[in-house]
Image (cartoon, rainbow, N blue to C red):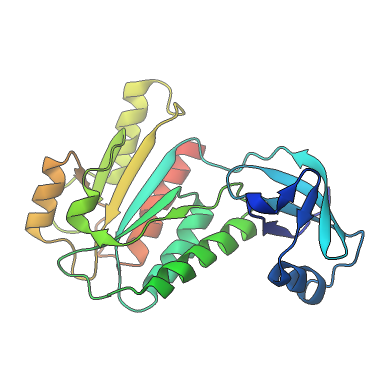
Length: 243
């Protein structure tokens, strides 16, 4: 099958074999991509399914369900202390490409950003676009920002908090130990990884995370930017589970 453009369609737009396109989708397909009636594209619901669809005026017709396997075999929730400026835009875009399942933005003791509702809307749009571009079948969930302490109760098979200071094991070594101990690294499971703000986590935040079952880990000997750390962490987990 030739490479086709992908767009995310809400489940409410599907009516049996027909898809009702929004005005924005019609503009994108017809004006931006210059598709014409009869041209084909990929419709994805953002929840794991793809369909081959054919443009038919202001609507589209579903031709067939497509089987695609681009998702990781684990669910990864990324807790991110919001960086300043537009740094979280970059994190959402890159970590969506790497396979994250859920973003949990948090406000930590050293967080400088006070996000608006419009920011959340923007982040979800970026995640949708990045999922389409990277040929994922699932669009990551982005939760509303909460205080860091509120995110510590998340349940997962493995929970890690990344810290640049201190004598902590490398995240990769922890992942490899889990692989050896479980004999089958591809067992379906969930991982939560927390990365800090500019200036890092406070000692109290690290202590609270440990009490909540988080393992402190290092991402290497160098001090990474708040925007870089989540991308490195996701890269390690994704690579470990795909090799």
